[in-house]
Image 1 (cartoon, rainbow, N blue to C red):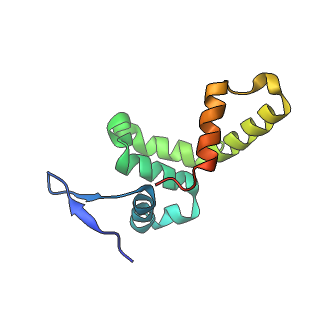
Image 2: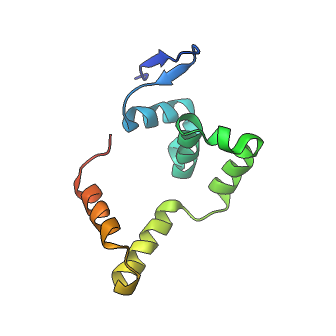
Length: 110
């Protein structure tokens, strides 16, 4: 099912709506991102968060580095959580812990 598109001020298509719609747009536009979360992240940042503007000509080199050479952000997040759970002295600040707890119990992010 195609995502509803709208035109921007400059006449370019823009995906309106929530994160689910934007991710569906990415997966439709870049089928190779369906099999690689890091590629989906890269294209999301490129399309919606200005990565191309930030990196300019280096965007493609970043994509290769990010998808082929670095440890997955999810893996790093999981290992960080494991280390912090086993080592209370390495836990995040109480403010960050409260924010994480709110996020964990908030339900789906739109």
